[in-house]
Length: 464
Image (cartoon, rainbow, N blue to C red; front, side, top):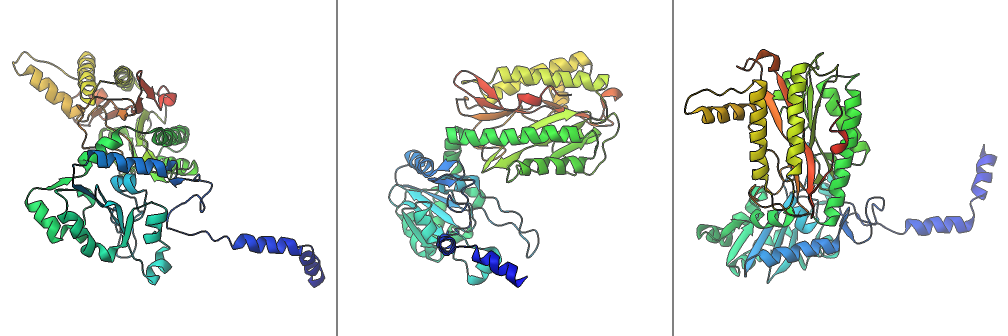
């Protein structure tokens, strides 16, 4: 054995040894998130996050400065770490606004943007013990060299430096969702808040995030493709394993095997009457013969999410009652998609869907009018009990993206929305028994284009 080992060692030349040693000396700096050098399989040179370049991040800051009032200051705090128990954290997800402006995917930081101070980052200062348990994180050098901050300071300097920025600003904007006492307790912030000079920065950032760049759309298309392929596999899987929990697990597995980092939200897998619970999340029941299953799912691909819903019978075929309702929802989906074009609004599309669904449900016999003066009110109220949801919402870095943007805002090219008509009939309602316990939703992602729209998930809409 020693002779064999000796011969094998002799075959490795001196040049090969030096080459391997030389390769090992190319140290890759770990900043706590992927970089082109640490993850070349994910990122190209010049990208701050996968698919999004430094130039795009700098353009975002420039555009925010353009809408920020003169002498205004925008403050962004990173999303906090949320704990499952005293020592175990939930998987971390960065706040969308903080990520949109900085590119930093780690907790503990505060970023500031202003006409005078430029782009400034206050970075956390991990201890040796923190590094031992949690690994390296981005610090001041990463803020300057990777995220390209104009200035960077340790978090311990925030109380010394930020108040001066605030005092020299006439109006403060901050991310209300992630606001932290670290800066909110400062006298300068308190004084501005008392005088009504503190506003929610999301009013500005959501308008910027609404229209997606070509790079963002590429990531969103990939997210949608992953979710679509995963759902198709899950639909096939449902014939053999008609269990809500198993279908949820299968969907997550297929998404992650295709490159998704996480699910966009906890999958809704409602079998039978559970499908009539709009955001059902227990996913713990076996799906019975003759029942439908409604799956509302989506994944996140490098910061951009997908959202789609399909309803089908895993253990057989549609009953006549199920088919009647499914066809109504499908036709409503198709007609609403036709309305998705520049100049239209989500509110207008929603109102159209309500009229179409009310008419269809009256024809089926689920909704009834009477001769009273309040007939229209009663009809609307009855319909709202069967579908209290909007026809859709904006989609992007968050599932319900850009929530500060009104549904009356005209759609423009580059905006992504969902179209998701549905009907949710609980058991033991005053609806004819054959329709009770049926929940159906068909949801697509729709990109508004210059000439109309592009539907991301039409591939499996007709699968029954």
